[in-house]
Image (tube, rainbow, N blue to C red):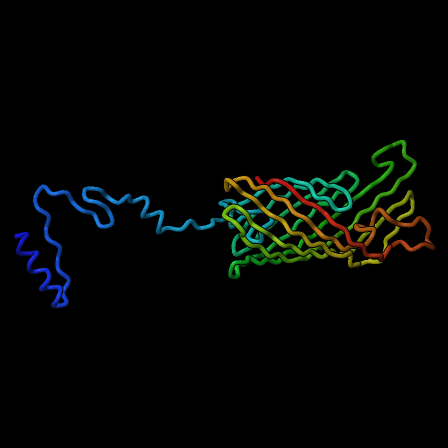
Amino acid sequence: MFLAAALVAPVLSWAGEEPSPPAPAEGAPTAIAGGSAGKERPTALVAAATSTSPWEYPERGLVLFPAGPGAGKERWAVGAVWMIAPMFTADYRRGVGAGFTLDAEVQTVILYNQLGVGAEWAAKTGPFTLGLMAHVDGYFGTLGKALIATTSFDASGWGILIDPGAKAGLQVARDSWLTLEFEAYLCPYQAQKLGTLVLSPNAPAYMGFGASLAVEYAPWMQGVIYYGVSLYHTAANFPLWFNVEATPESEPFNPQMIWYLGLLAGYEF
């Protein structure tokens, strides 16, 4: 039978038909395509050659990246930011669905304290994730008697900041995300107290803006390390409370705008 099949094969090939391979003889080793007789091609190698490893988003999301934690999920983060002085920061973010994220954050350096709440919305466009945000912050700062009873100098200040902004995020590696953020600083109200004198400079006031570029790194897709650099262009006395004059004839608000750099770093739980 094997001899007959071998004779018929050339005829079928000439006629344009694909011949069927001859059946192996009983007891003969089986030949696997792409391998030698009696050996099977490793399935794992085939799968590795044909499959791709997608870049996944962390299960609990990110704090800085525009997409946030995701619907029904939350993230905590602690860190530090250096503007004019280093400040401790703490952030809480929770995704509520439809691209929206709610957040609360605090910044403190004892002499200056700021607490804010806000919301963000994000959507994916091609390789980028774009977002819009708005925050409302209340701040309070003090020098002198409020901290050191023996100090004769007594100054304090308080006010409200409204911070609208925008974000653009891009995943640059399997475990790394890059976020560019722009935020404007508007001050609808502020007041300063020097001894018994209380001053309230002109408001609302445009206080400047800040732009930051930050990296979030999640090597195990659980905790996240973040770090970045910022560029600020604000009033010289931003957030205004610590630079006032003590006489009614002097100008209580310094309109000079200055440029300076900042740093940020922290860890997301």
